[in-house]
Image (cartoon, rainbow, N blue to C red; front, top):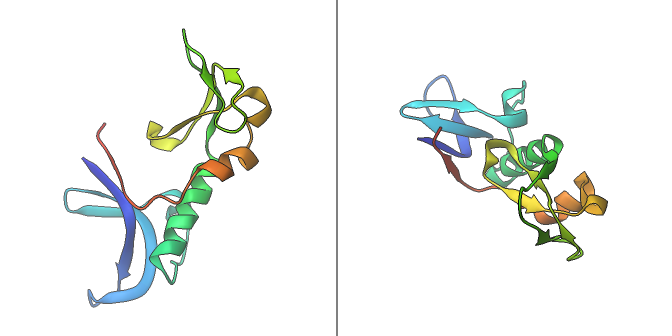
Length: 120
């Protein structure tokens, strides 16, 4: 099982470093994910690490994913559609019509994650 959340970094001495990354934990192994895995020095707060991961999710969303055999109302305008946007890990999907298949619309809907679990 993978557990994703913002965690405080530890210094070389094992004590809290006062900086945060958004991370994944599996068993006793923890590593940074999203933009925090790309030479990020860390964030002064848990909330900033969560927002950093939210930005990563928005930038890496899969648009124009088609639902087969069903339609649902767009989360923005309620127009019926078969299209959705999927976030990394497949943990979140947002039904958005053609006109709202963009980062700006997704930004309205996606909140900063506090905790995610997944099993692959």
